[in-house]
Image (cartoon, rainbow, N blue to C red; front, side, top):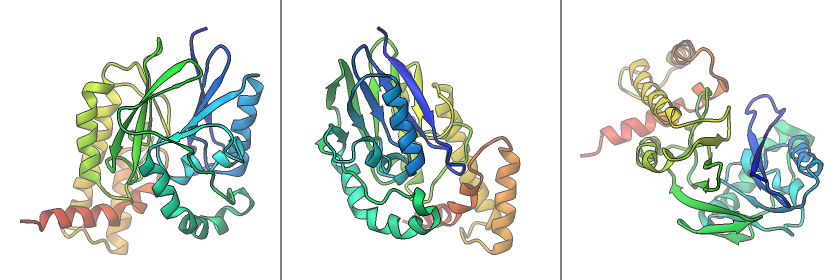
Length: 279
């Protein structure tokens, strides 16, 4: 049978994160695992309903909304969980802080313990699993966090699982910085991704090559509006932050994740000003 890609979109209302199941004739591969207890259990039920064993899990990056749910996919880590060493390290470095930051907000929905990758891969490796060949690319900090990868499935579907490299019709989380590297990655990866039919992303619908340019445009506009709102200082007041947020929402009125506009503003402002002050 041709590989089927199933999309699971979380019921959690703020992020509405995606996870994916690649279904082959005999086995399944899960790509990313959602954030909350309810969503990751629902993802596991979706996999169980397909009636085939899970051969492994692929993780694109180390943010909680993409890795926390592994706890309910394989609680003891008894199936292969593939990720870059940098993704595992980011998880190790941030788990305690994320529990402290978000646990009280999510309560019983917060996953109490993370299950870590147990199969390390490096840039350029090919993982052979469930009869499929997944090619991994390490794109470093040029995404929405400090450790990012994309997974290319070069079967008859020609699809790419790219985590949060693109936010389809959603305001973008940029609070971890490296905005210019992110824009550079979009440019550098274009020749590779151009040959793939569909891109499966962490937030929003399925993307294609045209969405690469849309993401770059969004980020360039965001940076320009930060400087405009702060008169070049990169430092917001309560009044200028509100005006900036309203401006971005008016420019992209149909985009989801509106809370991210203000969330990322200070970090982007600091990055832009630090770059402008370098000789």
